[in-house]
Image (tube, helix red, strand yellow):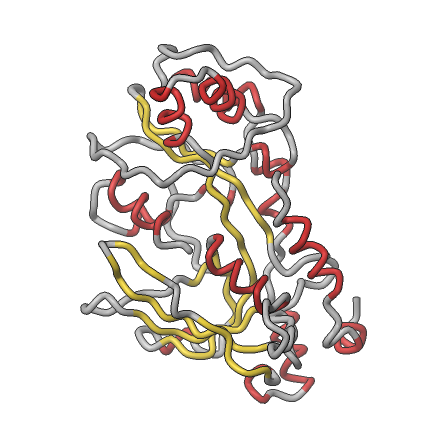
Length: 305
């Protein structure tokens, strides 16, 4: 797709709206420097302004979505991308279904603790970063959770008739996203985050906008099969983490369950040695901090929304 074609599509986002509707239906390295993350100050508050960018050249969507699991068992930690990302069977999903259908409250509680987590990745342009102004005017990848994705969906499909739909990923008719973080109960809260009024990104001309567009990162690798372990390898890891003390994971023909339980607090234990699989499962949060992995990693997970 040429830049001229991209501009001709400005203001048209029915395809993205359809994707939003479909998604709403039931169904050992250092940090990656391509990834941008907001930060909070000493008072626990954070503020930044970003602009979500359109789909990279040759790709269909401006985001990638990845399901993953992160939980602790008697044999260690299970931190892996889920094959359900690729619409394939996953051993944790199989086990969780068995546990959930047992009818036992204890089994349901275990299934809740082992539930999937959904993350999104998009290209962004950093408009304002108070704590790291050197990031301003640069393109990064941004990992975010369901809450922010819901705000994107609401901007595209507003609930009230006096609100005009916008495509947040549009370079010309999109809008900056103001990230406002409050620390509540030890966790980051994004409720006050909001989109600004529609505007051309940075007031830039087409030549500058094209340069921004061409500097984006591909999103395809997040859902590339090579970045996911096989069902057999995941089963072996799961049995190791569970010390083979639970029901064996057997692949079935049933549809993957979509458990939506309340988040359960993680019990602190001895620092694990987590395994990594795929780009989306990199544990940069653990390696960046000096905290115990069980605290820092899960705090980071909770703060991704």
